[in-house]
Length: 145
Image 1 (tube, rainbow, N blue to C red):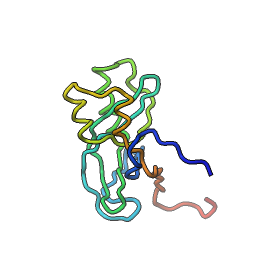
Image 2: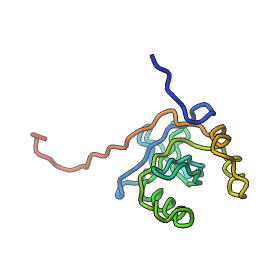
Image 3: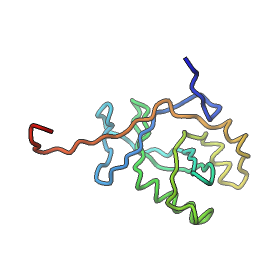
């Protein structure tokens, strides 16, 4: 069996779920049904045709499942705000959330003493598992469906 390749040098940590639905908010964990809490994470994001970005984002968090839940519309707005200063032509482009970056390394980058990409990857932890959120609308449907 082939070994899974990791981008970050830290061991995989946390699970991740991106919520693409505008009308669904994750106040309860989809896995264990317990209440979620707000927690700030430094997400390591790859922007297609541009490169990596470390973005501090307050996300929904399930402590029991170690699951980070991000609402896509909020993440898009934060990325657009960040890219308006860095690369306005990349706003609205596709991206992939790859993992989390160590808080100390992320804060060091905020002070302008950021690390080169090779050194930054030493502080990145990939996600253990990535989940897709699937919502089935309630209500009555014909028996054939």
